[in-house]
Amino acid sequence: MDPTSAKMIGAGLAAIGVAGAGVGIGNIFATLVSSIARNPAARDQVFGIGMLGFALTEAVALYALLIAFLVLYAV
Amino acid sequence: MAEVSAPLEQFVVKPLVSLHIGSIDISYTNAALLMTIVVAAVMLLLVGGTRRGALVPGRLQSLAELSYEFVAGMIRENVGTEGIVFFPLIFSIFMFVLFSNFLGLIPYSFTVTGQIVVTFSLSIFVFLLVTVVAFARHGVHFFSFFFPPGAPVFMAPVLVPIEIISYLSRPVSLSIRLFANMMAGHTMMAVFAGFTITLGIFGFLPIAINVAMFALEIIVCALQAYVFTILTCLYLRDAIHLH
Image 1 (cartoon, chains in turn purple, orange):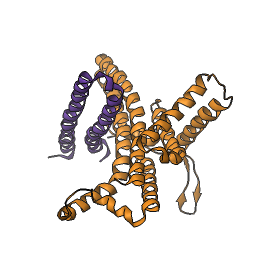
Image 2 (cartoon, chains in turn orange, yellow; image 1 turned 90 degrees about the vertical axis):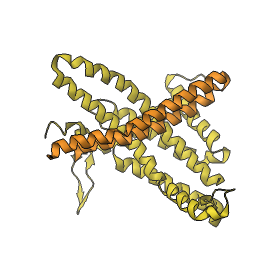
Image 3 (tube, rainbow over the protein chains, first blue to last red; image 1 turned 30 degrees about the horizontal axis):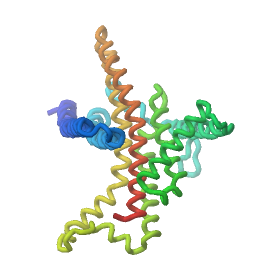
C-alpha cells in the first residue's frame, strides 16, 4: 500500500471516534430537554451545566478529529 | 504536497523581528504580536471602560462590569467566598483565553490558543498553583485527597493510583481540550474553504457550510474560555476544600 492511501485510510479510521462523542452529545441534550420539561423552573441552572457537558464532550470529538487532521496534513 | 498541507499553514509561527541572544531565539513572532494585541485589547476594554466610573454605565463600562460580574459570580458559586482572593488570576486567564480565541477568528490573523505550548503553559501554571495552594492549606493532609472518603480501605491499592493518575492528567486534558478545539475548528474551516475552489460552480455549498461553522466557532470560542475558567475554579475548590 502506498503511503498516501494509507494516510487516507488512517484518517478515516481516526474519524470513527467522533461517533462516540455524537452519542454523548445526543445523550446530554436529550437529558437536558427532559429535565427542563419535568421542571421548567430549573432551566437556568440546568442549562449552564448542560452547556458545560456539551463543551467537555465535544472536546473528545475534536481529539479524534485532530488526530485525523494531523494524519492527513502534518505527518 | 504543497497545496495539501495548506490547512495547517495558519498555525506556523513566523518571526517578524529576528532577535537572538547567543543560541536562544527570542524573535518577536506573529504569535507574540497577537498576544500583545490581546493584552492591549483587554486593557483598553477594562481601563477605558471603568475610567469614567459613571453611575449609569455606558456601553463600554457595562461590558467591563458584565465580564467582572460574570467571573466573580463563577468563583463565588464554584469556589466559595474564600476563593475570591484568586479573582485577579482567574479573571486574567478568562479574558486572555476569550480574547485570543475571538481575535483568532479574524481571517488572516493568528490563533494563539491554537498553539499547544501556549495552552500547556497556562494549564501547567494553574496545576502548579493549585497544588501549592493545597499544600499550603492542608500540609501533609493533602494526600488524603487521593483516597475518596467512605471507600473501603482494601480498595486503596486500586483507587489511589487511579486518583493520582487522574490528578496528574489534569494539566494535559485542560490544555489539549482548548488546543484541540481551536486547532480542529480552524483546520476544518480551512479544509472547507479549500473545497470551495475545487468544486468550481458548486463552490457556494462549502461557503454556506463555512458560514454555519463560523457561527458554531463563535459559540465554541466563548464556551471553551468558559470551560477553561470553570475547570480552574473547580480545581481550586478541590485544593481549598479537599473533597
